[in-house]
Length: 388
Ligand SMILES: Cc1cc2nc3c(=O)[nH]c(=O)nc-3n(C[C@H](O)[C@H](O)[C@H](O)COP(=O)(O)OP(=O)(O)OC[C@H]3O[C@@H](n4cnc5c(N)ncnc54)[C@H](O)[C@@H]3O)c2cc1C
Picture 1 (cartoon, rainbow, N blue to C red):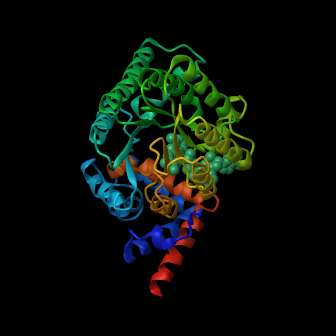
Picture 2 (tube, rainbow, N blue to C red):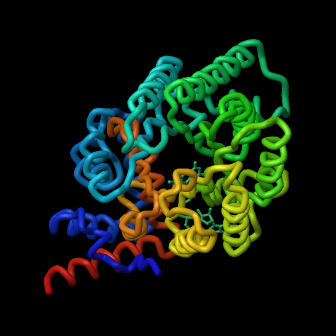
Picture 3 (tube, rainbow, N blue to C red):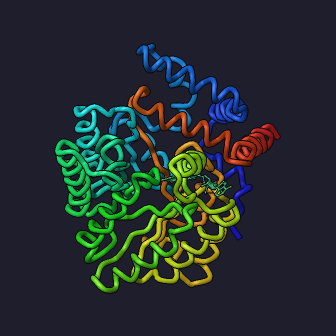
């Protein structure tokens, strides 16, 4: 059986000083008060245009980001390839919400789809739909509580055009593309468009992938609906599973707005939902493709065992495991060593633009029970092993 505690394989790519830097960083991130203070200070610095590169670049950025441009990421693509790990290049600029900024993000994401074309070391392209319009328009169009103004109708139409243009480019380039999942208030509109895109572009194989956040208790019925629809209309759904990144905000918003909490009642219920979804897709692998994004060791063990039990090839291109760059290398590198398909999300963008993503990573490492202590334990074990 695969062993995620094998730190020699997990960190074979890291030099002594890289190990030490990662250890110091995760040690700092384990204190919620420091992360909160860092978030507060960065928001002020962003507002007053105070330069942040000198502090962020050698720390958070170095650990979690692949570079400023697509070309910069080549270093990571080549390096990950050496360990049988593929890349998924993620343009992570989230703070450019002006019309010009949105257009620039769209064009850069298109470039990332072109960059992936024909490159066997890039497993997928990816985009975050909310970067293609303003939050206000996406939320209003998705929730359908009130009518859109003429301006908003136009903005939403442009959003749909950009969304479909990315999927069309992925189809033309024969590159699989992941549609990231986001806040509950945006998600109905994203789901509708993703369903349409899958019907249009997945006729011969899965090109467009829907993301299902399994902390939502309504996702299994949605998954079954996608499956039934694909049989009826004749296409191959791509399904990306994650647990979901916005739990606290979602619970709070549901309470304030007075609608039922969309999140599973507890962690065990989310885990059960996640496992059920993954199993459903593996059981229907002749029709669906699977991308599993998680740092949960148990989920990774379970999928690896399921692949073996079913007699599937470990490197069957219909199934991928995935973790974020800079996190859970013990899972990624050990899975890849055992010949399972692994891809790392490799974010890239300028320091200022990628800051919201970085702050989310720092918060996640503070709030996800056990994540930081597990990283620290692994890093420590490897440093000790090398000393010996
Ligand atoms: C490659 C990759 C891509 C990703 N893409 C997306 C994306 O498109 N959209 C997105 O939202 N997130 C995305 N994420 C983040 C993901 O949703 C999780 O927030 C993160 O991975 C932590 O979950 P886990 O499965 O790794 O770990 P775990 O530690 O096993 O799970 C933590 C998660 O469990 C859930 N949870 C925790 N406590 C409770 C509770 N009390 N009740 C109910 N549920 C609970 C929450 O979702 C929490 O984030 C991605 C992650 C990866 C690795």
